[in-house]
Image (cartoon, rainbow, N blue to C red; front, side, top):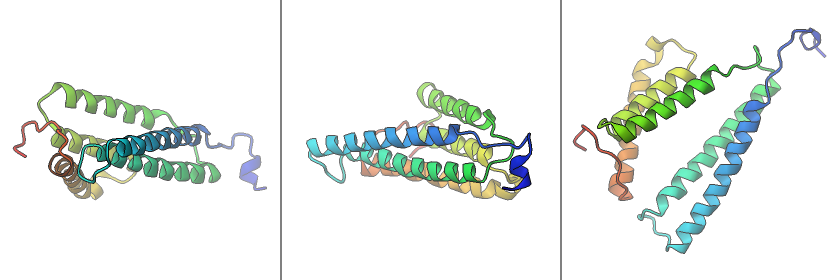
Length: 166
């Protein structure tokens, strides 16, 4: 054992992220199987609205698996500082604001999503803004417009257009 592990004040990574990631994966896997069953019951078609839940829950499962792997890796590396609840709470607040903006304003999906992506990128980034702002803006704009077009044009799902004439 190393001396750092024997030091009385040595920080240990909290198990919370691993538990959260495991729960996210379990719920995502359950919802994914239900989405597949629902799509099969409705006559699965690659262009109908039954495909959207399959895509969303499938991505949920993949992202939660990545989060679980990263959480296990961080736990193994004994994250310094013991973890903080600041970032998860700020992400939760950003998600709530995003939902409220989508529901109660005329901002629309593309602008609200781009702002949400930028906010979460800042919360999760450790690099200075000046190094990543152009990349973050391009990703936020491209992802929000791309998802909007896929859902509205290909899948026929209505998303709030807002002030942009898309």
